[in-house]
Amino acid sequence: MNNEQRISKAVIALTVAGTVGLAGLGITPAVLSAPHAEAAGHSEAAAADSYAAKEALKTLNSFYKPALKGQFPGVVGQLTVGKSTRQDVINTIGEPSITRKHADDFDLYSANMGSPGYAISYKLNKIREIRYYGTNVERQTNIGGITMKMLKQNWYAPASTTTFKNGDSTQTKLTYHRGAYKLEFIFNSSTDLDHINLLKK
Image 1 (spheres, rainbow, N blue to C red):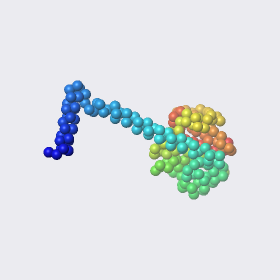
Image 2 (cartoon, rainbow, N blue to C red):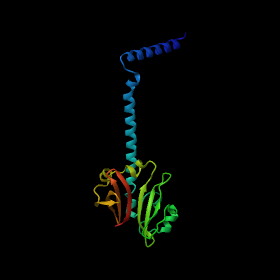
Image 3 (tube, rainbow, N blue to C red):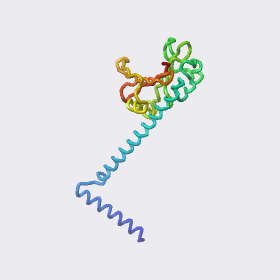
């Protein structure tokens, strides 16, 4: 028997003896390791929450500068409220998922494959309002992670805050002025941002 085999047998014997000794006290190794596993689980969850919050803040701040030009960030970034036509929109992001029935209605673009959802309305064939509904995939790193607290801490106090009924639910609108335009953040609750509107003042 070589030295490695002796050492291996000794380690196994000590492990078995330790396990038996602990079992005699009513303690199992699994119980001893549980707090460490739980702590690891909490730290992973905290890291995931921290990552989601950072990404949500990036999403929030991505709206700040484009709004001064009447634009949203991302794939619709070249479309401007009050200037771009419906044909410009179709050329940029395609035909709507649900086409408006009346001139004042919104064309709806569904969120899919990680792409955000939009609703766009027109006045005299020019964009009157763009609504951003965010993504369905990893929503917490997008619009779903933006809270009223985050918005106010980073963009300070809104120009106005109004509460209104939407069907059976009550929503709160926080409005921020950006040059000739305004951004409206529509919340279902203080931690549930439904969508963001961009329109002229």
